[in-house]
Image (tube, rainbow over all chains, first blue to last red; front, top):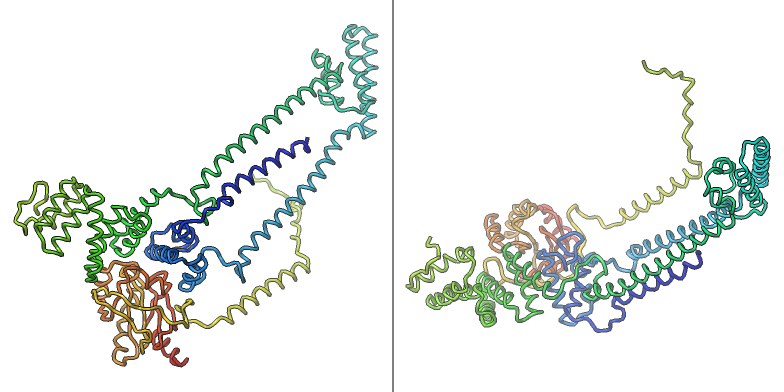
Length: 426
Length: 198
């Protein structure tokens, strides 16, 4: 039985290994894109200002700067090792989440493997010992009662006594013919079985208790009367059950294998090189853009214009036509440019806002930003009013209108145009 | 009524099994070896003040310090500044930064007269307006760089505010401190660097 089940487990192991190999992308040969490479590096760089987070998942400004730097270095064509060295030269080697495989840090890698191997060796030794002891115990269980001559003799003596009792009772007229015959047949059969030292019968073996308790039940009598047939019959049922179990096992393994072969490549295909198979969330490109935009907006709301601008720039690097990123980055460049009185930033802001307006003329934010630039930078109140009219036509949310109200009032007053309805006057 | 148990009925507790003399000796030797190793490692490390930490930059030329200040002015520190420079990364929300603020002001004032040291602050993880207000309230008259891109912090390997670097007149980084600094700490570090011939 044991030797027959072995190929099934081997098959299961082979299926598992093959499916994992396919899923791990060993066979896919296409080189990673720059974005994939950057993502892979980011997932192994520690966020400088947080504990045990990679810069890939952190929104801390320092992590955003590191991400921008990694992307810049990847675009410059630096190798993974060069980029890690670049960061390690500034933050120290602990900036890389994976410890180096040399010097004392090698222990971090070697010890778990050594401990695992030692554990495996212990398990194997224990299992082998237990199996040896277990099979010895099993042998003793099957043959023990038959082998021990004292027990054997005791049972034989008991059955002989039982036969003698039946004879005496029959002679005394206490037993019917049929009862006497069945009793005698049963005891003789048991005596014969005992002499053969065969396998124990179904009703618990020829123990002393069974000899006394069973005789009145017809089924038990029948079974006991024909022990050989009984064994064959139950043996047949057992074989059927065993066969059914085996098919069930084969079926389960086949289903498991099929599910694994389908599931592993499907789930693993979204994984970027360098990402672990477990524990990391992989996002589709559109999800990544949405996440980056959300992060940028959150950082911008905190007033951290520089990091927010970097996040929008990251989106634009991958998707130069992303209208939201263009508009927001343009607006941020204008604000940062004003703080630092940078003419280049401000002119760049103008270009970006113009591009965004071309891409999506229906975006109210772009018109609000352009109108503000017209008013504050160019002192062009009529132009600003034109933009603000477009802004209001795009039906912005009420909160945005009330936020923008002071600028709108200023523009309409300067242009001498009456303020449209729906704008708070104070 | 409580049951009274005769003292004789309670079996005398067996003495706990003592480890054999060999086991005790081995455990003792192992502990001693580990302790000796620890002492050796700790004793041979370079002595440091309480707030000074290691950085890959120590002994190397400092990264370039230039950019726009919170007041919108351009600022660039020469490669070899000719004086000691204290580069202080800070944020207005950071409590240890508020602790060290007055000491930095005092240090800058003292060394402005002697002309052998200057202070440059860099905003870390903070809004420019918040940092500007904070510095104005503190009375910090030295340049405070906005570091919009975060590149300065990255090049210095700054993890959290406050982080203070001491740069020698030849432009090399001589000390890195991550806790609130005092004017006395900075003077001591400068004296140490001067003694080392910088």
